[in-house]
Image 1 (cartoon, helix red, strand yellow):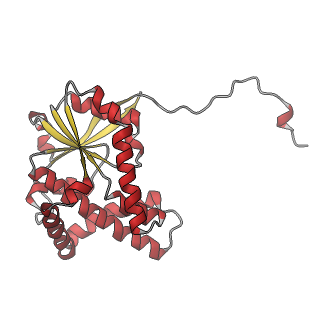
Image 2: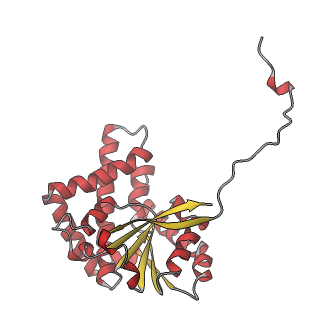
Image 3: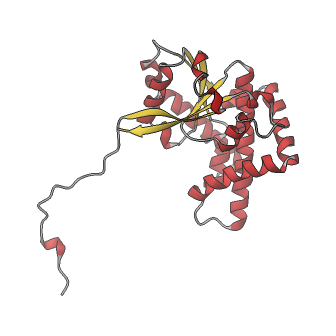
Amino acid sequence: MALDTQAIPSTRPHLEPTRRTRYKAEIASVSPATSRTTFEQYDTCFLGVSLENSNFRTAKLTSMVKWISRRFTRCTVLIGDSIHRLTLESTRGMPPKEARDRAMELGSQFAENERKVFDEYSDSTDFTYLNCSDVQDTREFSEFHGELTTFFTKDDVFRSSVESFGRAYHRKHSCGASATEWENRIRMSSEYFLEEFAIFACLKQQGLPVMVYPGSFSTLSEIARGEHRGAPEELRDLIVVSLHLKGR
């Protein structure tokens, strides 16, 4: 005989799942490894912001901004607006124009909604916003992007690294995709990374030597470690600091 559990009231209080509200940012890795003890000698960095990414919700963002404020006097907050269009196209099937418009809107919303986080630490660090869309309008971006695209086409090892990075991402976000859709998503991820890397090269050229990000950039870290020698010098000279956000 089945027990009617609904007829027996529970004496235990119902516990709602909780979301951590405090985090501590810690160094997960630095590329190249030789810069782990020296990157703080620079007074400026840039923080890469991925839109619609849980690592950039207010509580986690606050931990990163606090970490930066203790080490750098200036920080450029690089908002990934225009490049997010490729994510929206590949994972949500949005037409290109709709995806771009939505990506730009999300970028503006992030800047508006999270400004208070940066303002809280403005006495220690001068935070300035920069949109990827603004960088992509420059001649320097076009040159770096062309250089990276050519390298991607000609160098099997670099291409394999970039595509592997994309496959790792889509294993988590592309359940149920057909073989054709899967390959299209990998292709668009590769384009995303090439555009993103070209933007990073522009920032390094403009005098921002350290990139801070909550997570790993396998291909970018490989370049910083001295692999993929055909990549732009600006990327080879970039210091990549990957952060781990620990709940507490």
